[in-house]
Length: 85
Image 1 (cartoon, rainbow, N blue to C red):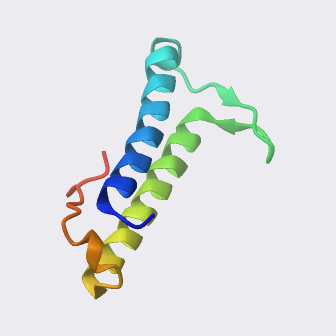
Image 2: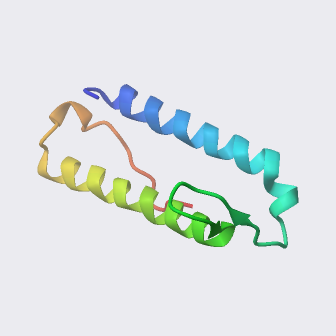
């Protein structure tokens, strides 16, 4: 990705997919901690949420480091959120 618009577009698409999942299954998951089947084995939904939060924060820190070192000056106008969630 070479432009801020591409980075934002990618992140927005991922967030939309995740948001749609939570919207679709949120009521079902509220107050419970079901087991989610994954290729790496079953995992509690609460664990999945924690891992997804960590994953998003990791990539946010990567972007922040890239912007701080100006390795991609064309992304200088990209504004990162102060918090992940």
